[in-house]
Image 1 (tube, protein in one colour):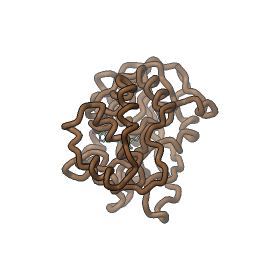
Image 2: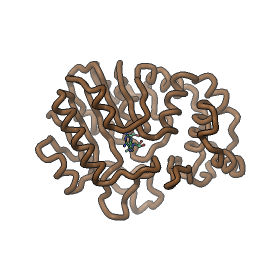
Image 3: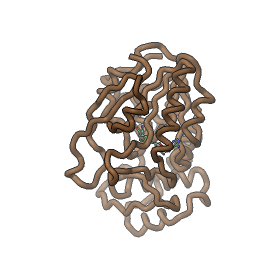
Image 4: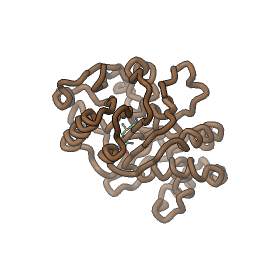
Length: 278
Ligand SMILES: C[S@@+](CC[C@H](N)C(=O)[O-])C[C@H]1O[C@@H](n2cnc3c(N)ncnc32)[C@H](O)[C@@H]1O
C-alpha cells in the first residue's frame, strides 16, 4: 500500500465527526512526512476523528481509541449503517429536543440509538465538539446552528466502506503492541502535553492524560520501534516532549487551533512530528 496524494481527497471519506485535535488541516504538511514505503498494516491507536486513516485509505488497519462512544459509533457505521441512517433522520435541531437527547444515559440505549445520539450531539452541540465532565457525562450546550448537516449520507457510506477494512478496538493505546509487526505503519496522535498550565484539553473521555501517560506512551513508541514498525507521532512542542523522544527524528509543523472559542487563541501554533525513520 502507498499513501494517496491530497489531490485525490475529494473522493475520500471525510472524518464523520468533529473531534478536538482533528488532523485534517495538517494532511498537506504530513504528506511529506508519511513513510514512502509499501506497508501491509496501518495502526492508529488514538484514532479520534480519523482524519489520517480516512486520508490514507489503508487496505488493512487496526484502529483504537479509549472513547466508548466514538468506537461504538464507528462499529455501528461499519456494521449497521442502514439502521443508523433511519434513526438519524428522526432528530430535530431544537434546544428542548437537544437537552432531552443529551440527558439520556447512552449505556441504556441500543448500539444504533447510542451512535445516533452521539452523531446528533456532535453535529448540533456548540462548537461541534464532544466533551465529557469528570463523571463521563456529555456537557456541551446546544449550538443554535441554522442548518446543521446531521445526516451526510454519501460521506457516511464512504466512511462505512473504509471501516470495513479495519479492526476497531475500544481500549488503551498500548493494545497496539499486540498487533504490531515489522513493516507496519503506526500513527500516534495522543492528547497533547499542555504548553501551559491552563492550556490542557484532555476531556474526550473522563480520564486524564498527564505526564505519566506521556512517559508510558514514549515507552510504547520505543517498543514499536524495536518491533520494526515505522512510527510517526504528533504532540505539542514542549521541552518535556522533546526530552521524551530525544534521539528520534523531530520535525515541526504549523497548525491552526481548530477548536477554540476564543478567537485570540486561534493563531498558528508549532507542533512536533516525531518519527523513527527519515
Ligand atoms: C488528539 S485526539 C486524536 C485526533 C485524531 N488524530 C483526529 O484526527 O481526529 C486523541 C484521542 O485519544 C483518545 N485517547 C485518550 N486517552 C487514550 C488512551 N489511553 N488510549 C487510547 N486512546 C486514548 C481520545 O479519545 C482522542 O480521541
